[in-house]
Image 1 (tube, rainbow, N blue to C red):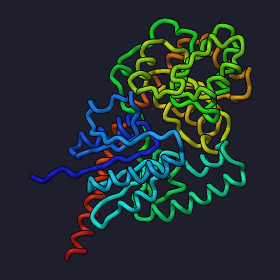
Image 2: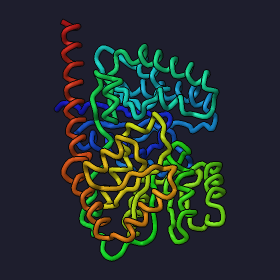
Image 3: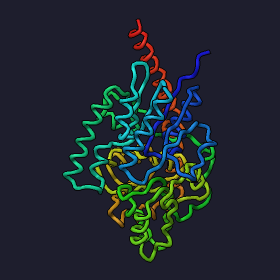
Image 4: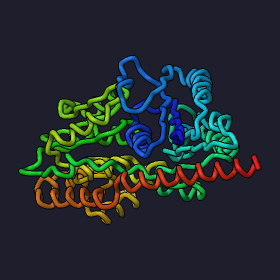
Length: 384
């Protein structure tokens, strides 16, 4: 009996139960018969050892320099020791590690979660000339170290940047609890945002919503740095009691977020991001999660986002800086509950029939088998 192919998922940045890395890719590969190991940072309070995927912990460093030097070297040593058939890494800082791990008889995959060039340009840790220099350095590093790696793309538009990459899109796993749930009765006057909280992801735009309506509540569920939470509370002013943030300086597990979707009859899911090149073309993962849960969406009116809302008839796109337009969108959903319910059901149907991880899982497994077959044929040719 042939031993299962060994796969190592490797990250020095993401949480060990990151939805894409752990819940989608790793679990799907294990279900398909691969021997999967995850190498990732771990906090003392992370309950990871009793999870179904074997986990090798990396020390968590508060210093970015230590993480990108000592941490990366530690990740390389632990990954190399496993002598895997496939190394699947998820962070640009691991590009040199992927290059070092590549052998003639194995597969190395670089999973591109972000458009890192535009991501670097929108960071606030350096001046614009320095950020442009860093972006150019990243592109050089990527071209050099990823030349023998297979590219896994989480977004459709990344194909324009990486034409040889394969799209394994970050669609949600269908959830029977969500699909079988019904939005009955009037929705509560509450809006929900899930996921990491940053200024680029609309932290201040969401924080201002309680100022627009004296009754609305805004619930934020996701990791939020305390410095940003403080700015959000300041922006909400005297209405900050209607801005509820869960996840200040802590990661929120997928299961906790899902419980929030189910425990409240939300008016809508929100994604009022300020315009940045980094997000304007992205189909946000949270869109699919809101749709999966049957929530109508209120989002920014970027052309791609507005087109998405119109295609699936699942929400309303507005100018995130136009307070009156945001207020009108909220009022419309409140005053037209049947239309809000229809939008939610449209989104749920789209996820069930088209925009779900099941379709991407099949692509992932087929692609793995293809890559391993290519590696085997290449090795046999060399050995011959």
